[in-house]
Image (cartoon, rainbow over the protein chains, first blue to last red):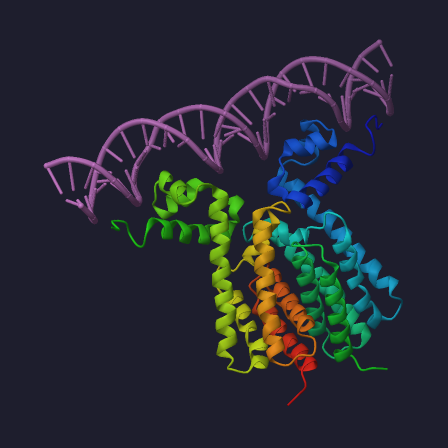
Length: 192
Length: 192
DNA sequence: AGACTAACAGACAGGTCTGTCTACTAGAAG
DNA sequence: CTTCTAGTAGACAGACCTGTCTGTTAGTCT
């Protein structure tokens, strides 16, 4: 079925869009560029994604899966203790900052060029809320007296590290975020 | 000299650009729109700002003055004690979040749609460094053992609050940032 | 009065972007 | 063998965007 290089046409389009949209911002990349780089016909792209906005939303969904996955993986790598996981998830930030071509938070960057109330905006809010809900759950499992507050604090640090990383992929930012997170977790949870 | 509504042509252009660029992002606003909204001739705009990029940089400079001014004002309003000022500056964040049409950090939003290494990028890094240097100075005056670390922590919170505010102008974010800042300041500085 | 300056008004060129449309191709299914 | 499906290739329309250019108008300075 696939007479094309690798994967289905849809996958190649989405992979290419992921790479280009993240590097230059969705508005900075034309549909023609996505087509050329993914080696696909224009009609094929518009068959899978009726409009560019649909492609942008699919891109955000992909980002959501990738970033949530990275957070979960980093947390799991810290062991079974929820308290350790709350700090360990910051390793995902460190990893992201180190990566070549790091350009900050894809959601914030995309939302920045979208008007308030747009689907992109809504999707971004949903993503941030989902992450915070997950962190809140971890904080609750860890026994925090005010899990919502701790989660808010930690996601603030996460967002600050992500956003600040638009500037330079300085891992010092991620390290500072991690150590600060540890301090906040220690302050919020009784030592054992 | 001014036969036009209010202020010089240059001021009106820059004020309009400030408003539109912040709301829709520089790339989302055409030069024609800026001209129409500021009631100015095209040639006049291109006389004061040789290219749109120059206008964008002038916009960022205006943002820099506005935001730095707001931080300084909020800090001063907290009194003469540097320790109180480190927390008080977060009132600038609260004020920004409350404002109608709040759309996050103008620098981060603009940098998001600019390639790495561009003048916009450079200007953004300079702005963030200037703010952090000022916070570091405050931390030093307050007697912090590690002023750079405390400043890094507080600017992380500030950036996180600014960036997160792209989503909703929820003042809860700003309040959380402020209370977290107080906790970090208390932890870094000996109680008196 | 005459020269100069700052601004207005708007046409225009050249490029880019999204989205549509036509025509063709290769493999799979019946 | 025929039909269907997924895809390739590329022309095209219509909108928009930046930057230039011509011509006009209203004040200011000497």
